[in-house]
Image 1 (cartoon, one colour):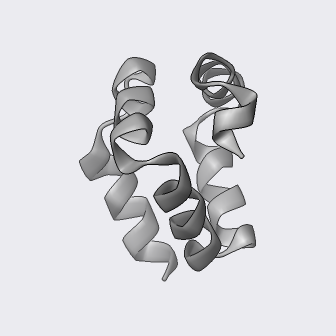
Image 2 (cartoon, helix red, strand yellow):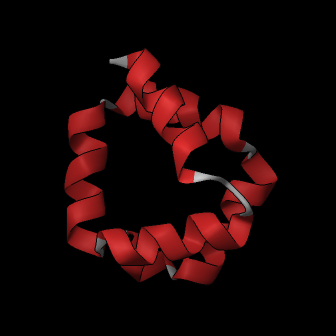
Length: 68
């Protein structure tokens, strides 16, 4: 999914939508589905995107942990 869109577009979307909204989307979609997407795209690519956007993995992890 993310591959087709392109990492650049993902970065723009994350910036535009905001991390709070991303967390809401993750809650709605379900962590399991997100993990499947991340596996398909590759964790390395996602980490690069998050770094580029300026989101710390630790911060994201806390949000995800809270939603489970």
